[in-house]
Amino acid sequence: MKIIILGAGQVGANLAASLVSEANDITVVDVDDAKLIALQDRYDLRTVCGPASYPSVLRQAGAHDADMLVAVTQNDETNMVACKLAATLFNIPTKIARIRAQDYMQHEDLFSPENMAVDFVISPEREVSTYLRRLIDYPDALQVVDFAEGRIRLVAVKAHGGFLVGRELREMRDHMRYHMRDMDARVAAIFRNGQALIPEGSTIIQDGDEVFFLAATKHIRAVMKEMRRSDQSVRRVMIAGGGNIGSRLAFELEGDYAVKLIDHNKKHAQSLAERLKSTLVLVGDVTDEDLLQQENIEDMDVFCSLTNDDEDNIMAALLAKRMGAKKVIALINRGSYVDLLQGGKIDVALSPAQATIGPLLTHIRHGDMAVVHSLRRGAAEAMEVVVHGDAKTSKLIGRQIDQIDLPEGVSIGAIARGEKVIIAHHDTMIEPEDHLILFVPNKRMIPKVEKLLQVGFGFF
Image (cartoon, rainbow, N blue to C red; front, side, top):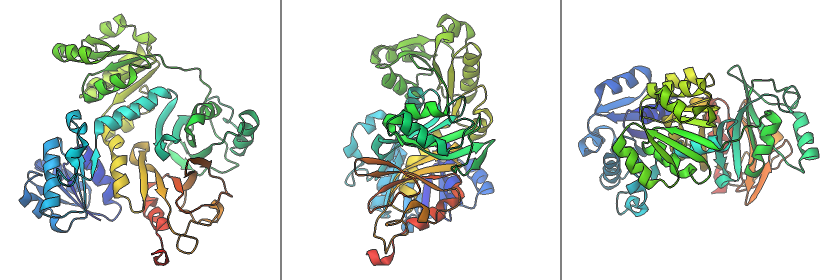
């Protein structure tokens, strides 16, 4: 595909890095020449320096024959105007815009073809707050993502003390069916010391393994206990930073948890206190040890550091952990910091760009993609794909899973068939219009997966 990315910030740069390795023709536009030079030095792509919403700049970027425009600059208005120009002047088929302001998000008709002509809207704040909410709802999880409109979940946990630790995977199914009334789950991948293992019946889960499993959402908590012994529950949450993400998260949590929020700006804190119902809003420095001690940081089940400053988030999270907070989550923009800190003293290091890239990939991948999630900081992916055709035109339909030539390491973990959730096993048969949940442990396998999904000409 020929794709124009407007904005070379964290989201744009991460998206370019993800797509350029997949034989896409990528052009990145930004006003910051230094960012563009850095991207060109690292990747095989074109760059254009100039304002993203200027017709002349879009023309220079190749808008006349582009397949897709992804507008992810820091400015909502620039993104919307660029999409409108892409439709009016250049007839680009697919336009995606990053929109941060909630005022715009509340008026969906703004994005219609006759108005701003935005085909798909991406909201980083919404994606990150949803991601954080799931991590708080499942405190032992490293990552939780939804499929089939929330009926299936993929969860990553660090194995520790559960029934399955030290046992072969084949024992899981029998144990759950005997003790948990026909409950079922599928281990999609295991990462040991950073290396992916292909799960087989004889695979033994070791303490400390990062285990990804799929199950019906209603069974997730029970399955987690198979991997990890824990009595951890969440009642108290402290949020450091009252920006777009912090305030949105507080609003989502305050009906179910006791929430405290710290912001350094007194005027902004007063405004938040008026808008939030039960959240206790405090004014102060998130790295102030005395303030954290006064507010009983040692009683907090989860501490979320969500300011706009990476260093403050890291320091606040480390301080909160040292002072007794059970789980700490830090929002970190710099990818190198995320890789360095994840899984150490900081339980979860979350990159907004990585949380946002999944929804973008959903619209970019070939095949009928319902959902795409970026996992393990972009190294792996999980996707929900709809299969079309019949046994003659499809490489999947009418076949059992053990008859499908899946790329190395790729697994089909679950199937959504209408309202029914089916955990996939070797003898599960694929039917037309099934929603398959695939786990791809290495994104280099994506082109092979897309080829597998292709429908032969006979179908048309």
